[in-house]
Each structure stands twice: as structure tokens, then as C-alpha cells.
Length: 237
Ligand SMILES: Nc1ncnc2c1ncn2[C@@H]1O[C@H](COP(=O)(O)OP(=O)(O)OP(=O)(O)O)[C@@H](O)[C@H]1O
Ligand SMILES: [Mg+2]
Image (cartoon, rainbow, N blue to C red):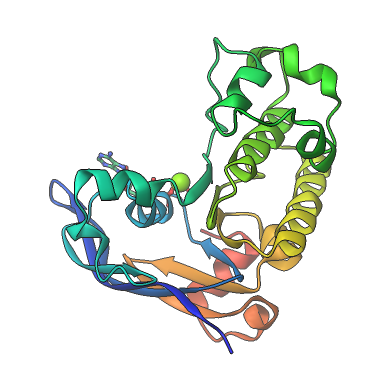
């Protein structure tokens, strides 16, 4: 039986006159990996930021376990709520002036990072480096390690493979698959990369014009009758 974790109901979000999310509905189930796909500017990052509390939304409700609507949380409750999430941001978002060790210490002060570095296939010598000396692929691994070190209830991965060459992208997809499936963390991945969908996402939601225009099992995605989604998969958008 699938267990409902996050219920997004009828949420809308606009910036000025621009409507980004338009009465959008989506459910996230415990221990499942969900991909959110859609063209650039369709509101994928905004949607995840509404879910993890980084952005407020205008109308509608987001419930999380017993919390009926996260919009009603007090400042302190919101801080606690946000700590449930481990986030890999679109650009990895490491602190440039801090070493990798110091970056990881933001997530967990009591770890010596041996196990997590092993899990993301990086040597321990990386701890003394600065982010700017590392390739974007390595920075994303560190971002992923930092997100997982927080022991999150929900992992949010925003474009984990964008900007990487296909070989490194594939390595990262396999790595995420191993981590997500082993730990059974509820995961939301925003992506343009269909390999991420096929490799480690149980379900996929396709966002279009501020709404979820297709939702289903990732393995059924090529059987869909949704023309916009078909074009998206072919890379025509
Ligand atoms: N803080 C903000 N202020 C104003 N407009 C914003 C803000 N954040 C996002 N937007 C706008 O909302 C729309 C959706 O942005 P969002 O970043 O969610 O797109 P996306 O689907 O993640 O795109 P991409 O695939 O390029 O990352 C865009 O038109 C963007 O310019
Ligand atoms: Mg985005």
C-alpha cells in the first residue's frame, strides 16, 4: 500500500502578473522516487521550493503527514519543517569560501565523512579542497553527500545531471539510484534528463502551464497519449 506523505492541493503561485503554478495538484508517497519534468521556466524549481518552505504560495494547501497546511506553521515550526528536507540545488550551491569538509559540516558536525564519501565515490583527500577547484560533476556529488548527511525525510534533487557531460551524468544517475533505493528515502527530482526518469524515478509528473499535465509510473511514460509530453521526451520544446 502506498502511503501518502505530501499532498499538494490546488496551489497557485504568481510573480507579479506571471502565473507560474495554477491550481496545481500533486501527491508524493513515502519511500517513492518522483521525477518532476517539464520545459525550462515551467515552474519545477518553484514547485519544489513551495514544498520545502523556501517560497510561500498564494492559495491552496500543502499537507505533510499530520500537518494540514504548511502555510499555517509558525516561524519556529517552519524551521523545524524545513530541516526534514535534504536539498541538492540546481547549481550544487556549495559555499565557495569554505572547504569541502566545512561544507559538509553544515549538514552534520559529528561525521568523519568516510562512509558518505565512499558512497559518492570520492576520495577523502577531497575534504581539504575548495569547490572552485572541482568539476561541476564532483561538486554535485558533494551537494548530494551534504543533502544525504542531513538524514532527510525528503530528498530534493534539482537537476542533478544538468550541465554534466553524458558519461558523468550517467554515473550520477547510477549513484543516485544506488543511494535512493538502498536508503528508501522519499525523493523528488527535478530534471530534463530522461535517463534520471528511467534510471531511478518510480513515478513521474509532467508540468505544463502551471499544472500537472501527466502523472504515472515512469515505466509507462512512453505509452502516454499526451502530445506535449511526447515532444518533451523527444527533446522538442
Ligand atoms: N524569485 C522569483 N521572482 C520572480 N520570478 C521568478 C522567481 N523564481 C522563479 N521565477 C519565474 O517563475 C518561472 C518558473 O521558474 P522555475 O525556476 O520554477 O522554472 P524551472 O521549471 O525550474 O526552469 P529550469 O528548467 O530552467 O530550471 C520562471 O518564469 C521564472 O522566471
Ligand atoms: Mg529549475
